[in-house]
Image (cartoon, rainbow, N blue to C red; front, top):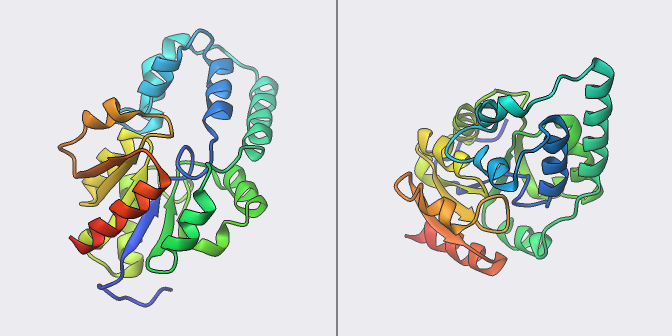
Length: 218
């Protein structure tokens, strides 16, 4: 167990769409199960709500699958996701930030689809704590678990995400967010949640580093 220290500064990273470009693999998987879904409809699944709630908005597009078809589709998704690449500059950013802050991950990915990328990209060395979907269904609850784990107030943490639904769930735990525009949501989406403790929107890795430093020195 991590020693409690309320002065620690903790960065909570989303995984998909922030560290690793898994969005093409994920969109392809959703399209197979929901033929006809558009790119904008896919983006809306993550807008101001948890992803699983978003899926219910396109339930009318969902096709019936046999157990064999479902298993085959999920296996293909896992295979494609494992081949996904880190966003350019990610390793340099993590190397720099890990010198001054504790890095954690709060992801909706299941552990099986997460650990293979962590191993292949040698990412585990950067992170002090990882919360998977299996831990709790709600990212808001997992965010609180991270605060409790390190014994810090919510003001000593910031959530880095590409989805506005995460901004809402971070806000529920009293945690501010930084939105990155290289994932599922662009600047216009984030501007729609500007009143939910969204600290800033960034377009580059360099800007992300700068704004994180600004957040913790404000």
